[in-house]
Length: 433
Image 1 (tube, one colour):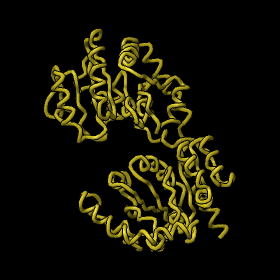
Image 2: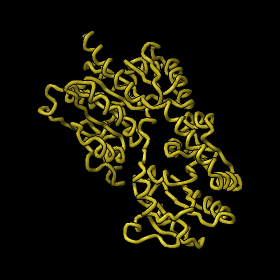
Image 3: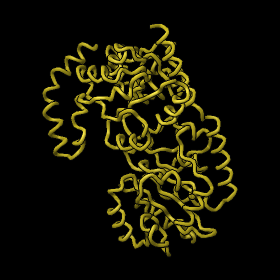
């Protein structure tokens, strides 16, 4: 399997060597650290002397968030602990710099080309490689094992579709997955999929989803600050359209208009997934005759009579959820959809409303639906009806908040268990060698 895989890499690499830098120059992306993708990177040996280095491989922002509590726990469990972080995307790189200021190095993961990975492995010499959630790179795992590193899949996930695809190429998938020393799956269903893909049952443990340990919790003081900044008055109800995509702003504005026929003191907050869409959303608001203010402007002026706030800042959405009475989660109304986190609203004590297209969060959606904390809606009439029910019933909102608290309480703690399993596996490997 590896022979054929690497043969293909050797055939394609000259082309990649030409096209990737050209694409980077044209797009303007990854210019600064372009050579890191080819394995040209050095680590300070002075900083690494005597350290047990963990190589953390995360694709992007979501995986960095998952890794954060695990790294925090590992620091308390491993003597002379140190770590490096490799990422695939620019957003992941920026997030890693912010979240892990104490990392020995942060760099872009090289192409999974054997000479590049092998060269970098010699420089890092990790005690363990932690692959977060997904990103099954054969040479990264193989070279890690070759140099004595423990290979661990943390918070492993594989969708039903990906599982079927991997199973269809079992001749390739089974040798790949069997190289893992430890697979920590998010739940029993995922554990079963990895077992079918060739991971020895003794290497698989199901610890729960670490995402529950990453959820943002806003304190009372922070909530009061947001209410003050947003000028939310007594009795005013707040609805949120979070992580919206094309077409969903117009949809929610129509729902908002319907709600205001019976609820006058109502505020809508729109939080687009991508900030570059803000000018487009402003145009929509003007065309619909809506008075609005951007969140960034509220630092300089108080909100007046505007009935829409456009959240044009980064990193505030999860905290703002806490001051909302009802929440819609975007990228779910129109196909192909995909969805965004349904757990962040639950952390804020709310039951997230969403459309029928939430493929990326199927496990969370199923668990939330079973707990009565996820509501799938299909059209504007359904959205208006369910929003109205929650907005007008104080007891309903209080019941949902209690249900959300109970749901989360029994699901936290996976990051500590994961860190303990990693530390144990490293000690076991050192003992065997």
